[in-house]
Image 1 (cartoon, rainbow, N blue to C red):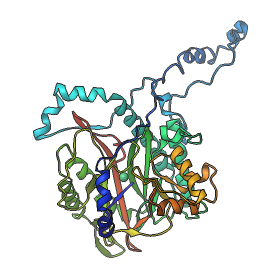
Image 2: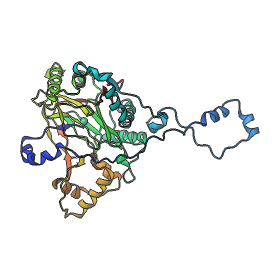
Image 3: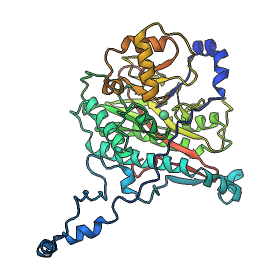
Image 4: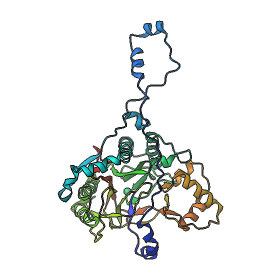
Length: 444
Ligand SMILES: [Co+2]
């Protein structure tokens, strides 16, 4: 999910209030859900062997019937992905992301005993992140193999979300379940000039076309630790250079990121890479621009935007990245203006962590607020997620919560019509000893 640079006007208006969220208080909703990953499939191998070919007569004679055997725990992911990931990793050791050693002044961290200790005390945090990242990889593997022109955006979004819910083991229908694990934010399916924050609402009939450029941006979380990662799909190779530019720019940002690095410097490096590309489209050459009012961002527990931004153009922002922080490094390239504005019907929302306590006169708003708090906390959600919880006729209440400053709306962000935009995004952990690109896969 992207962070949009605050508009100058709203920046001024919010200046007083802004001071407060410099110190975002994180409501630790973490619960112990993992850990008991074993004792599913121990005795089953032996039984499988006994029932193998050639054994039927022996098996019949003995007739040692166990009281109803459970189906053997699957050893590999299904298609579509529905096997809970913890079943595939009974040891609880999830694969690491790409681990990159720190350089220069930070090179000592790799071997520092003090830093290694700091790493060890956060092992659950790391395990949750690695599990979420592996779920992201498995779900997107399915998405990449199965998304084809002719599918509806609703079908695609639901496929990704059903996979995420199954693999985390959190269907998200019981009160509080989605806060323990599941989808980290609404699945963004952004076509062409739409850069971010578009997810189909109920009744959306949009069908993916052969000539679309679609950004697929989805999140997986466990205990509020969100992996935010995105890629771009195009079926027509004529867009290759646009996709290559953005992939390269995102990797530049990942390479430059590190403890004590100024975010403005990262933006400059990203912009330089992005703008070294151009795209020839139907006989016309377009420079590829970094979308200057979209940013990467830090991620804190239960909040997709922690308060720091990572610009994707040169900037004087002196803010430094710090040890232990988590960042979504995402870049957007465009053949248009390189600047996005709000447009189209809103689907994405999130409860504001620092929301004011204002009396709500609309009763449906009060009820909806209670549902949002119990089901999503401060995790972003979309209208379809309210629909599947059985909520009806909630738009008046929802709009009331937005205008009261309790819920923030994230409308779609678009460049000019006729332009094409692309996005790649990874989540990185600035661990004390090493930078871990947690969502890295063979694909991007
Ligand atoms: Co993001």
